[in-house]
Image (cartoon, rainbow over all chains, first blue to last red; front, side, top):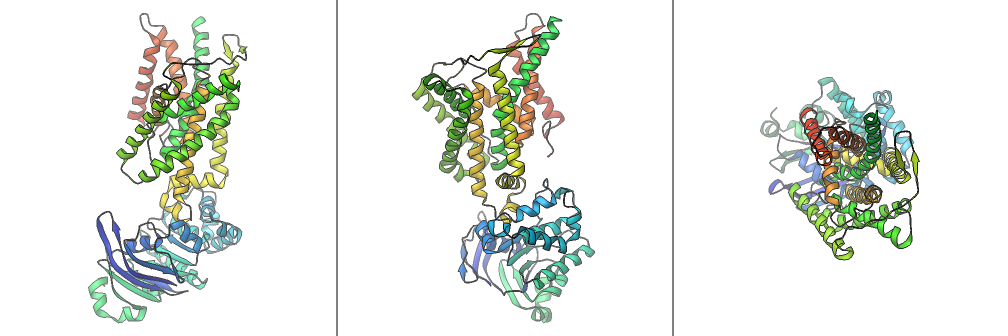
Length: 234
Length: 296
């Protein structure tokens, strides 16, 4: 579904990605693991187009989307749940969700999408009229995922959804990600939480200093002691 | 008694003028809120609005009220042009670059206006009578300016709260990256906000002429740039509503202090009112740096 080849990018003069290759299959959960500073977030930001790729290609269902701006990618069905959530703090929960359905394609399905996210996250329904900035960390993460769902996506890029959450909530977030896959969505996940993310993933890549050091099925990653020791610190 | 009456009358004038000040600052705050660009050329756009009102009135006898939509449209077109030609390339540039660019645009517009319209002060007088209150008389022209300012500010408010595009502008203000993930074309929102901001500024220039009937000149804008900065900071800088309310407060301070300062023998009150305004600004910055209505 998503094919990334020799992707290079960075910030200003500083190169972070040095030729990333990865494939995401339809209706799977693919996780990119790696230590801090390996370029995990940069990979997602470059795929989504918040950062401009320096070279390499990104293909989505056979279409070259390498230099496509983010709003066009959302139109195609790709969205990002950014690190740090990036909600609209002074807008209500409901308005945050409605903003997710900004594009025509998503707006046409507004009611269905709202039903879906309120079924998935009944807490958000309770807090519908509350400002997003007043929610707890866990609720904010739920809202960030829910807002992404409102865009009617096929592929969701998720940047550290468990970051800063208590263990119980981490579990809840990962269960939600699994549910999304069961709904037919494809997920490219970036995580520091190795065990929990391998638990739900189908494929995994290990990113090391801006390059893919290893990739394969989850079982292959689990069994490869070398990789665990070298890159994951477990 | 005479003093109290004079104070009340001046505060009333302050509120009326304050509404126009508020409206004249909304564009500045909108542009800063969305694009993080300080429009130091603000006054030049007010001047364009003032000349629009002047020429429409003297050439065609069109009342300033009817010049309002015209000025808004002209301002929005100028805004889009400035955005596409200059600002678009500088959105991600360091603040100093945009500051200098806006400064240059302001000077360019002023000098162009001087070439076209000359350097003399001009004016027009729109006589529609006045209303008599027990303690003072208020010309209808000022009431028109007051009511127009409030209605226009309210319309902008409703546009931001209720329309899809208005909400998208707010989303970009609150979180640019979040807006990108919703599929909002941030560049389009930047262009729209800049154009709206300039449109509102030019429009407010029309209303300004109702207070300075003979003060229209290519360089008249400087004073308004200065006042708009004070008002914008009072209002929390990034919020158009904050700016509108702060305009009221500024108008009241300016006119209220005028009366009070006039009581001191040997003091020339007009020059000192500006001093008082800036003292208030400094106090606000000391005590509540996010602005009187800041925090949101």
